[in-house]
Image (cartoon, rainbow, N blue to C red):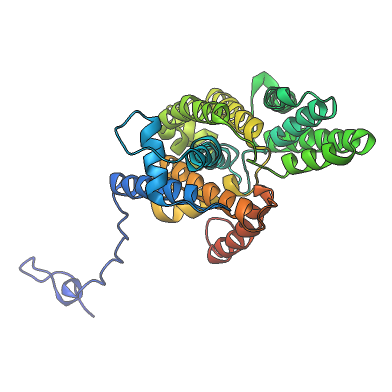
Length: 364
């Protein structure tokens, strides 16, 4: 029988056998490198997509137009190309970037707070509430109030959802949030369908349908300011809570043991994400799959740490939606597809691929 120690206190044959090497832990790229690469890709995406359209523009024209409007000393661009860049395409791609970044960020937070990998920013009934508000003002002929009405509808849906989800002592559990969101979403969707069926005709029906499926047609610099402002203010708050979100990975009890008050944190972040989503929906309509797909795809690169996941998800969401909207507005030009159709056509198979790769993993 092999011994583990010799008489001299030295390791014997069993102890001196070579131990099998530990499997190497894959090293993830440093966050600053990922962010720098993502930001560079986003800037290239913005510049290139502005050149794409029925009237093809040179990249130099785009850069000179932007530089000229920023007051830099450059050779002026002709009037028509300048108007196409500054008044039409640039506001649209910037709005798409802000909306995509916000949806990617919101999706990552919602999936963590609800501990549901299928959660997306519209889980609380926000999309249906916003759609109801938008349909109401469009049918009344008050299209100028559409962003305000959509935001008001989203906030109303949030208030009703959180009121229904509130348990004893004000507690807010993931299961109650999901169920309450489904109730409010279905109720608002049914009300929207009834309103559209009963009163919508001709162009108003097409306009409502395009908005419900998501569209960035007709956005202006005001849209850029609303989407980017909401992203900057609320996104900054969410990023400040990245460390606390990590504590939710193992449930409320573990979060409490780590010094995070789960109920108060969940209330705060759900409200913040809902307000962000409401502002985005008010600008773009309901665009699906971005908030659902992006966090899962990005986690393959960054890992579960929210300090890495959240900013990269925002960049990835921005890039994805800019390209999706470019396809939507050019594929069948001069007709446009709702961008939500493109994100669904792209997102569904990609998500199915991620689901297949995750067999036996965290989604079981």
